[in-house]
Image (cartoon, rainbow, N blue to C red; front, side, top):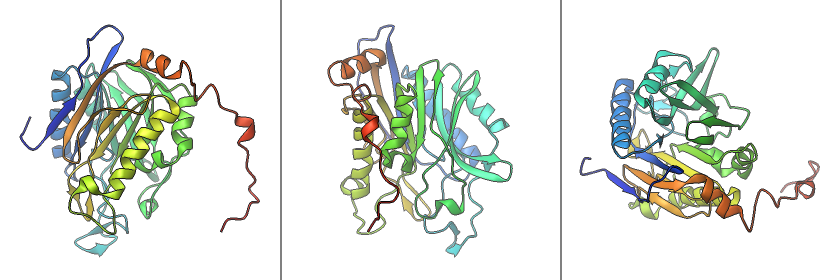
Length: 303
């Protein structure tokens, strides 16, 4: 592990029901070969640490956008071609699956879907693609570069039932609730979450957008009583400075491991089934819902 990267984690007693999982904060860019080199190194580090579920950031294969004010290159609006578009059944995703081997790995990429491009996240193992999610909620001008996804769903994997979100998706409680209602035990949210665009601070640990990032992570885990993995870009790309802050959160909203604002890997162990049962034993937030009271009128005027 290089001196400028950190690995934080908690250790447990092991056991058949215990899952060791990790979320990454790291810097990725446009060079796809370099991105695969970094991803391969991180997967190997995680494997050596006994990790079975690893979350890499949004857009880790090909990089994110240079700006949220309209993608630019060398200051000229609209001139950056953006990240390379990769087919879900293409050689790059197969390469990621091969790197994953016996592990379950989640990674963000730009999805080539014929006449559309999506900001997507894929879950793979050595057996191939286990699940895929297209980002639904798009901040600022992101919709200039990507089409929007249209659903949230959970799926079964060797490490449990997982649901995936991308960055701004987690700002909407309905997103993670939909995953929880679909049986997700673990939510994996991958991000390219930057620091504040205005009133920027030198120390990212004091950044208000970083505080929001952390607050969403803890609240979404707690309100749905699920395990939450949050991966994020680190460093800078174009005009964006990312807040890092990868973490693992338990179903009570407690942070089990976190990287801070720099690059690193947050590693935690948890008996997921037992943790969910314990969290939901007395106060079951999904069980105690009253959906018949949550209706609202579309005719209500907004200010």
